[in-house]
Amino acid sequence: MLKLNDNFLRLSDSYLFTEINRRTADFQRQNPDKKVIRMGVGDVSLPLTPTVINALHSATQEQADAATFQGYGPEVGYKFLKQAIADNYYALRNIHFDLDEILINDGIASDIANFPEMFSDDAKVLITDPVYPAYLDSNTMAGKEITMLSTTLYPTVSEQINHLKTTGYQPDIIYLCYPNNPTGLALTFAELGQWVEYANKEHAIILFDAAYEAFIQDEDVPHSIFEIEGAKQCAVEFCSFSKSAGFTGLRCGFTVVPKQIADGKLLHNWIRRVCTKYNGAPYIVQRAAEAALSKQGRAEAIENIKYYLQNAIILREGLAEIGLTVKPRQNSPYLWVNVGMPSWDFFDMLLSKYAIVCTPGVGFGKAGEGFVRFSAFANRQLTQEAVERLKNNK
Image (cartoon, rainbow, N blue to C red; front, side, top):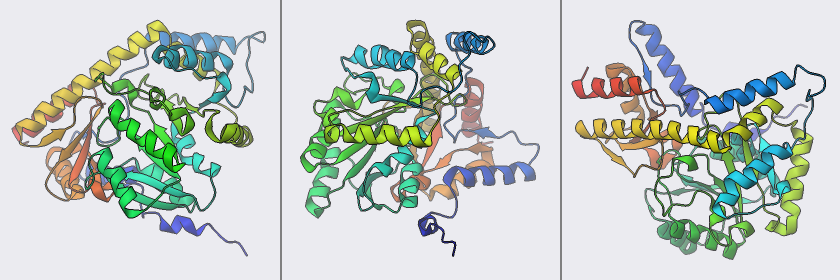
C-alpha cells in the first residue's frame, strides 16, 4: 500500500508567500484600476551589473563554439569560481579554505533546506523565532524535533543561551541568520562569538545563513561566521549571490563545510550527497558569479547595495512620520515594524487602503505577531510613491 510522508501534514496550510500572492491577486482582480506596490517579497529590482552581463555574454559565446563548449560540469562547482570565492571573498577577511571545502549551488535555499539530511533522524533542531520560514518547513518535512526560540521574549544572545541552559535543552543543530531575515538584526563579533562558544561546548553545529552580509555597515559586525575564532569547528556557512549581486533570477550561491567538523566526515558526506542528487549550477551562471567577485564586479555591486540601503532610509523616515517605530540600524534591506495589531490584519488594511504589500510578521513565527516586514528592494520611484501614499493617507 502506498504510504505518504505524514510529516507534510504537520505543515501550515499555506506557505507564507503563497498566501501573500493569493490575497494580492484577489485584491487586484477586485480593483483592476489600483496600482499595487509590492514591498513584501525580497526580490531585487535593479538589473544585473555591466561586468556580470559581459561575463554572461562571453560565456554564452563559448557555448556556441565546439572548442570552448561546456556540458556537464563538476557537481560541486568549477574551480575558477571556487578560487574566486577563496581569494576575493574569504581571503580578504583573512579566512582561508581549501577549494574542496567550498561547494557551489544554484542558490542557497535548497542547501539550507537539505542539510539536515546530514544528521540523524532524532537530531534536535533549534530555530530562532521569527525567522525565514523555510528552516521550519524543511525540518518539519524531515520529521526533525524542532524548538523555536523566541527572540522577542529573549532579545539578546546572552538571554537566549541562558534560557537554553536553564531549561536543559541541548540542540544538535542551530539555525542562525544574520543580518536576520526578517528583523534586520545583525550580531556583533562578541554576540556571534557567544553562539560559537556555546556550540563548541555543547557539540552542536551552527547552520549560518549569510545571505544578507553585503548589507552590513557596522564595523563591529562580522560578514562571515568564520571571522569568529572556533567557528571552523562548529559552523557551516551558506552564502548567496542573489542579494549581493542581484542573482535572484540567475540562481547561484555557495556552501562552506570546514574539514575540522567531525574529522572531515561531514564534508565527505555532503559532497557525496551533492554528487548524487545535483548536477551543478550552469557554467554561464558560474562565470557570471566569478565576474561579480572581481574588483570591478564588487564595486558595481556595492553601488546597488547603497541604492537599496537608501531606499530603506526613505522607508524608515516615512514610516516614522506616520508614527510607526522601525528598528534596527541599517545593516539590512528589511524594515521590521511594530504595528500594534495582528500582522495579517495590518497586511489587509495596508493592501485595501493603500494598495501596498508588506509581509506579515507572524508568517515568520509566533514571535513575529504584531510586526510586519517591509522590503527596500523596490525601485526608488515606487519606494517614494509608497511613502507618499502613507503620509497623505490615500
